[in-house]
Length: 317
Image (cartoon, rainbow, N blue to C red):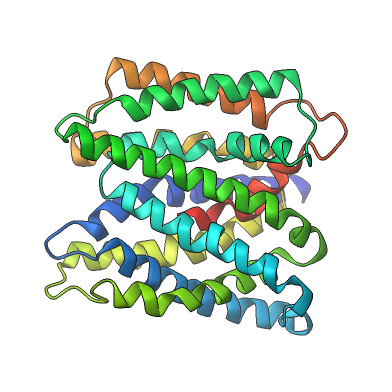
């Protein structure tokens, strides 16, 4: 029975990585102009969809904990700004400009930024191996940011890469802020509260963009549906299903599949090319992430990266 549960968990993790790894491709198709959404409008729709679906699930599973304590509202509001509004906004603005290959590589550096922010905030103890991992990963990220995607303008490509990096940093700060909440309340409930508070930004997002494209193409609509259902709601359910069956450290290992899936999609579907500098920078980035996310646990709160990333890593997309 235990072996069966583990296999079920591993299969769920594979599906999660497929959902996340294909997310940049479908997001790019959703935003493709003409006939696609504007980034701010897509952020608004994602917030609304997450608030409704996660809220309904939270009300069903944790009916007594659905109302957030008033004392936690300031922290939750900051989490909503950093983890949802800015995180999704920066990500989608970046995806619209960067290549799928670059996006797939850059987004997995969230554990690195999370550990760096946690050390800066003194909730993690710096460890030599992990600090080395930060430096190695940052070196790889800088090389990717500076590398222009073939076929794109240098300015647009680099701006997109920088926006993806800013997205990762915003989400890392959110994870550190949310850590205490996640220890005191169910993860689903915290995510619901954060989405509900983020929904206050929806009127502004719709006011500064067209809520629905004038002539929505079939591909953009299907990609829009994928972004809402698979990259937000279904990925959360699969992640929760997997975490009940496999350790969080296994989830951290599976994160390395995301850039492979994104890279394959970019190359085979969009015809993007992986240059030698990007390949080498990607290896450096992944090596740095391995040093940080898979390093030995030594007191303090080390190990929280794996646990937190495994529980709420999905909402960045």
